[in-house]
Length: 213
Image (tube, rainbow, N blue to C red; front, top):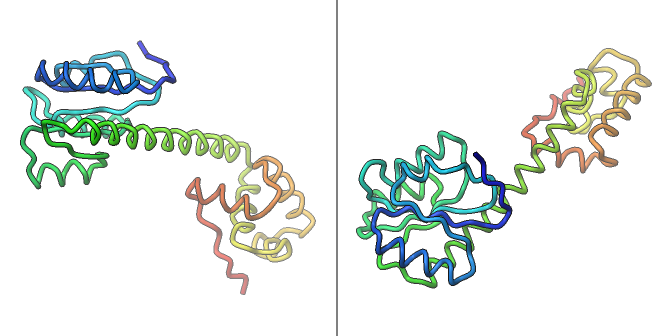
């Protein structure tokens, strides 16, 4: 089952019942949806959430720890931002959590304002990540429409070569290059080389070798 809710949700994972109640209340009063879980295992077994959100995650819990859950989320390619909370902050744990992409690491008792600011930052990060992912998917859809030759021409275009230079590199007529280039620009839905460069950079496509000597 998948939850497809575009309202941001804060997922609270903490084995301490009093901490869950207190933090849930703070988060809910601030106007956020909140879903609380007593363990990392319960969170993983819950219906998949497909909407925006973040996780407020206790570090030390029976069974899977907070760091274990963070690693599991990475394996599942889930980029939902994580805010760690812990009753005992130590440098190695904090460093590991932040290295793996945690938004913040808060020490219990958690300061209300600090927590809410961290949640807002995490949700902003999640929103930006989703927008970037959606844009990348659109670019890939356009790239899939290109023929192998159009793709070749595109890489030379973003390398800054003129049509006659591309023709020389590919061993084809300049008029043929113009045809491939026009079709490629149309399929990529761009009108300028600058726009094309921006799209290919976002897709991680390297320009062709511009050496025409």
